[in-house]
Length: 198
Image 1 (cartoon, rainbow, N blue to C red):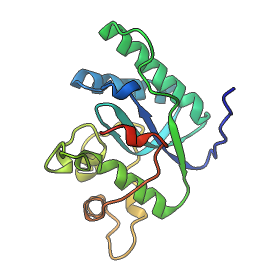
Image 2 (image 1 turned 90 degrees about the vertical axis):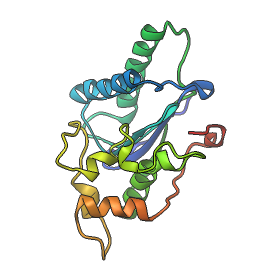
Image 3 (image 1 turned 45 degrees about the horizontal axis):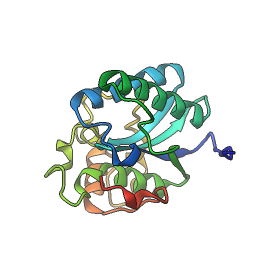
Image 4 (image 1 turned 120 degrees about the vertical axis):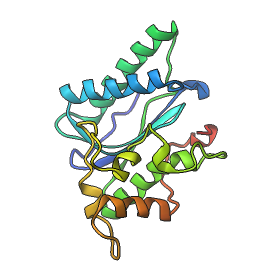
């Protein structure tokens, strides 16, 4: 029997979901677009706020807070909707995700800065960096902080993190990007994360 997880409705959570057996389930632009479409659809029905996200080829990271509904309901909807779409597009049979999503409460100012930076740095922390500059990775919220005039998904909040920056950083998204680029961060992941290279 699966034990029901307890969640604090007032906190953000670092959420990680991984493809089954190292399967690359976000390998094309169409896959990335479909996941974004899924997030927008679920957000309209079950509101949530994100401070950061990054989608890699076989997993994603979200820094997410539910607005009204439990986190498990939101994640169930996101993963089910994307799974159905993936199966239809590729004729796939069986589960596409490794197991249940991992979620770790982030309940401090420093924690939000650390985890969001960790999420944003994913594309350059691989054995072979996926991009030379973080702002060039299009499947992350980082480019939307680099240029905060760009249109962002309705669920992305770009106002909070800059306000949490310590001195001597200015309270701007540009300064937040400098913070991300200045410090290599660590964050707790699920116990089996070492099985998966991004």
